[in-house]
Image: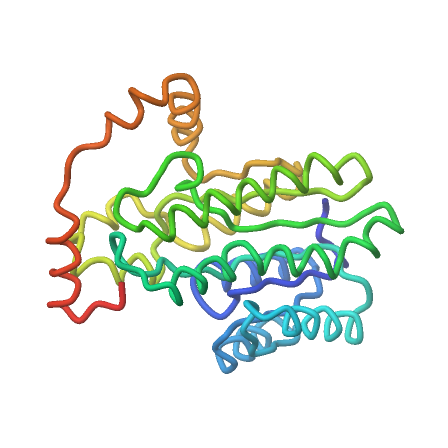
Length: 265
């Protein structure tokens, strides 16, 4: 898809990679709705790119519908919906039932709500694009964040199901599976995991360029590190060896360190 003159919604657009993508899409000539749970951040991005912003929690279906309605009233039918909002959640396996549900709503159901609201119109006109940020974690695993890893795997499964059923009818579906990015989420892990977490991290602007090229090709999997595809093949070929390849670690010690650092992780 070429984004010139297209109507695009980006959730989680207030900072980091979402902000960089909103800016990059606008530079391509897209008409962008920037949605973020932080209203001022969303509005700030919208002002910068000449778009429209909305502060919204997309874990509630009525709020997703409200964003859809805003975009349609402002620009017309939505061409690309980029479900990007996410959060790592607690370290280890310490998440409460409420935290598990929050990540499930954010990483899975928010994508379901968007597809439910958009597919009838997209199918009727035979075109549209559903893009969701999944994470390279879904192609392998994250041995530190339990709820994050599980819900991101579910997000990938949802993207696969949507692609199987709707790409043949003109609705493109992509799962964006980035590795480490220099965003506040990754920087928030430094007190616990050390400065090394930023060593191979890409800048948001670099990532936005990768996303844009993936959209132009309509790739199902859009990755920032090609080597994660190799790990996915290893995982599929020999699950036993893949699981055993992960080193032992003291999760309790990591959680204690996070608490001592007053980390939000």
